[in-house]
Amino acid sequence: FFIMLSKAFVCFGIRNKVVLFSPYIRTFSTSNAYLAKMTVRDALNAAIDEEMHRDDRVFLIGEEVAQYEGAYKVTKGLWKKYGDRRVVDTPITEMGFTGLAAGLRPICEFMTFNFSMQAIDHIVNSSAKTLYMSAGQISSPIVFRGPNSTAVGVGAQHSQDFSSWYAQCPGMKVLSPFSSEDAKGLLKTAIRDENPVVFLENELLYGVPFDMSEEAMKDDFLIPMGVAKVERDGSHITLVSFSRMVQVCLDAAEELEKMGVSAEIINLRSLRPFDMETIKQSVMKTNHLVTVENGWHFCGVGAEICAQVMESEAFDYLDAPVLRVAGVEVPMPYAHNLETAAQPTPQDVIRVVKRSLNIK
Image 1 (cartoon, helix red, strand yellow):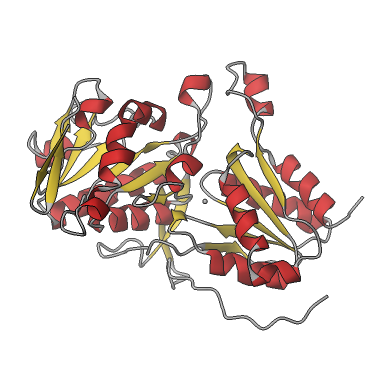
Image 2 (image 1 turned 60 degrees about the vertical axis):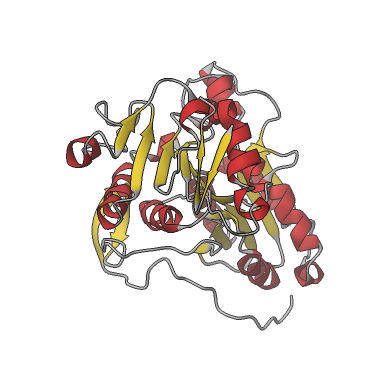
């Protein structure tokens, strides 16, 4: 049930033509000077720490986030620094800790977004609709964060990708970072937002180090929602992806380059709001588009991108149908060989790119 309060609520229910186009918006950083490498895990930890220091209304809640320092150690050191009042361990009941707000700004950690299904009513029916149903009088500044999509050897019930599930819901903002800069800048922006944000991380990226620019190391580094990043410039085909699949695209692009194919790679970062403009401008340059995601084809993020391109002026610039690369339409197998076969690989991307470009 929900108790409505002024400015907050408490819930207890214990993404051969000449073309003129504008340049891409590259707001993630402007400096080429990289100070150090940082893992995605440490970038998330830094973002939470900086925002808790900046705003004493921010607190962290979830299973094993305090003394154990998080199932994936994202919250390492925060309980010792901020204490029991602001880093709160909860029982194993997602339904119970999902909606705590009461004028504060909770960061609600799910051990995996598969467990968020236990609290889906609070997230979608209450949190996402509070601002609209209160005629803008009551905000819901909550960040729901945790690992989403596949890991290794965790089976069907811990491997689902919920990107398109949450992105389909009005009132909910959905972010899905790839690099350490993405993770830090987007999480800080999410924490400062006045309404609910679903922050989809990936377990397989937590330990991966990425370069951090001088800007990204600062306490005031933010990445705006709804702005994609061009990870790699190209001229022959556009690859659009997010989260871990960006690396799959980058790996595929290296191999494609050896074949004389120049692939442009767009890292969506934000699934809702959605940067369609960057995609359109790229398609109008390359005339070919392939989407890549770890989730399923049916009703996926790639399907939405395809639909919006077909409905836009970019359609007139396509020299081939938009194609999709996605996970196999089965629950994730447990056996390692089947688990690998169920997920997109660089070879899958290369095969589809060659089909789009009519390369034998």
